[in-house]
Amino acid sequence: MEWETIANYYFALLLAFNVLFLTHVIKINRKPQTVLYYKINLTEISFKLSY
Image 1: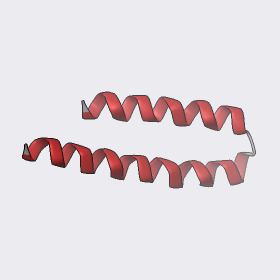
Image 2 (image 1 turned 90 degrees about the vertical axis):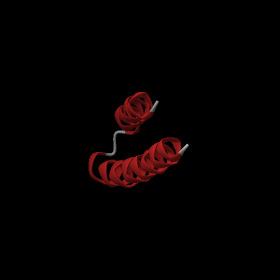
Image 3 (image 1 turned 180 degrees about the horizontal axis):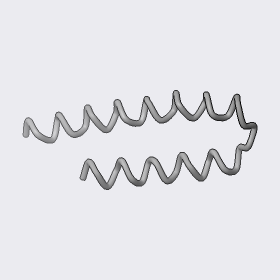
Image 4 (image 1 turned 45 degrees about the vertical axis):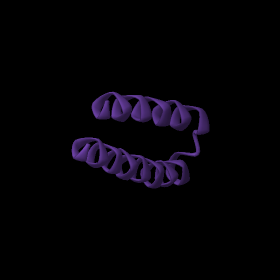
């Protein structure tokens, strides 16, 4: 039970960090398609790590 809570909290933090990082990347690169693909990949990877 405790481990699930920790994993969910970590996953939420990871997602928040990804969103912040990606908005920064979007401002620099202006490549929405690439960034969107990268965001989907990051979400998949972090989801696999958490579960």
